[in-house]
Image (cartoon, rainbow, N blue to C red; front, side, top):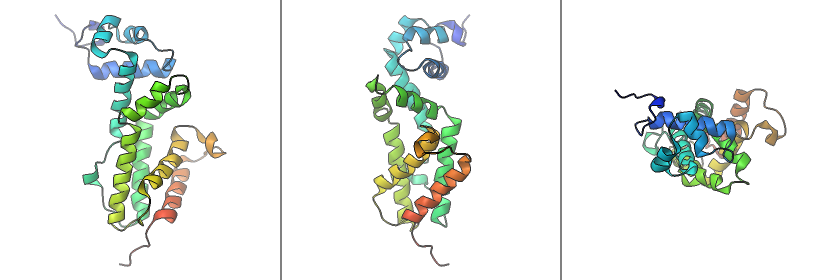
Length: 209
């Protein structure tokens, strides 16, 4: 008789369940203090099986980051919605980003990387080489480019503009509000301010109907 639960100690363990367990261990212990033995204990899969399937804890961390970053890669360029105003467009982008950061553990993973990247530089590289941050930046650039073509935003240095916007958002979600010099009492109001600032800086003049 076979079992599909995490306790069957076999290679049939669902990878989704395995990655859920891995994430919980990394978030609890940090990257540096986590070992394959810790992950094995959490999943009830022996270390030898983990090594055979994945090799190292770094490989597992890469998979975990990749899975969480997948949500942030949407919508794809072909599905960029059309809006009537630049403010509506950027509010849509901000709400989507807010959803990603609040409904996945991506922000928590980013904190692990931010806190430990100096001691373990390979984990800072994981977020880039694993299609995470670079892919999110690319999607943001393609989205903004599409809105420029729609006449909602002025032609600009798209890469720089997206980095500016993501920097403002990340200050709220990733690195805590200390970095902007004061506490963020109302997240929605802060994000709205970010939207209005971005539209004032990059938005095209409103079209007459």
